[in-house]
Image (cartoon, rainbow, N blue to C red; front, side):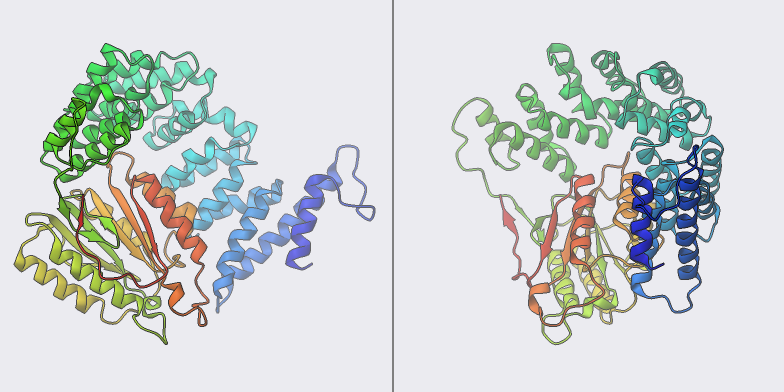
Length: 534
């Protein structure tokens, strides 16, 4: 049976429309079940054949993902057994594990679910745990739903309990309210319970019947910064927003933790709370450029005006006076995105596809190199920065951020030109991002440049990479600005056939949206950029 016919048969079986030639079902439906098992067996066998192939093709990877999606629509013992095997096997690729886990959660019984959890505990993979929590809330089987609202919440494993709390924050279940409250009270009272307390509070305020306003007001004064972060994210949106929550938000805007301040400013802007505008104006004098920029964006959202970063101009607006023309604030730009940060990491693709287009100039790597050197030379003195060039592995200019000076900028630019001289290899985007987030805790902004959707690495699908970024930025509020350097308009007659521009765009948009970053795509070679003025 060919691939198309197998897929069609699966749909017919599941819809109960197998046609007049299909074998009649027994009273208990056993014939249909056996037929579904047969289809699942064929799909599993095809998957294994593709894995064993000594000369894999690019389309083989896409077909394996398609098989896992088809198995999700063919719930039966054969499918469950095969999918469990993939989740348990250490050698299974990250994306295959993720897709197999999603399919399993649609059909798993309690025993199978325990096996999934045990496998995740052994793997210790933040991406899988992030995806697990998101998948729990997305229409799992009855057994899975019963598990994550009871046994899962009761787990002493932080990852298990945390994933269940994340699911409840997305899909509240009233029956779990008491358990969630118990977790929050226990963890909020513990010196090292900040992570679970944060996740429990996010779930608790969404539980039916919970007094979210009172909970968040109390959390805004909590000793643990993670608990205050949860309050900062949500308190400004509460109604009624009277004197008490207003005072609490003002306090959060002056918090000692930068992530809490940024979250409070972002939330106040999104809720358009003009009553705290004066406190936001105060943040325009914050030592961190990123915080000043978040505050300016919040004020722009509240006012509907773009008045820059000058506190005097905003005070004039607040006094209902004519603010006049805001003074020019010069900041460098990188591929059209303003570099409003003083702690920045540039992550640049140097894979073999960056040599495209092959018969016209400039090549992608030329545009990437020239723009990188230009922005480095435009960095404000004292800006902490680093450059990482990646293909099959990431290579960094320095082990940590260094302050911009004529000497360090010259060193970084020279290093980058050498590192990008001969692009080669596949695009291992996950490994580059993982290295960045795990090796340096100090940057608050990333500029990620790539020329296409990754086709290699532990995770290379949109689902896998987006879940990874959400896991890395749960507490660390890093803005990831994404640049898609396809230059497709330069050589429409000679495409790079291995690329899927739509997937690249989807991936980069999702990463930027998840981190309050900006996305840019270049179909043409951009003109020489210049510092922007606000």
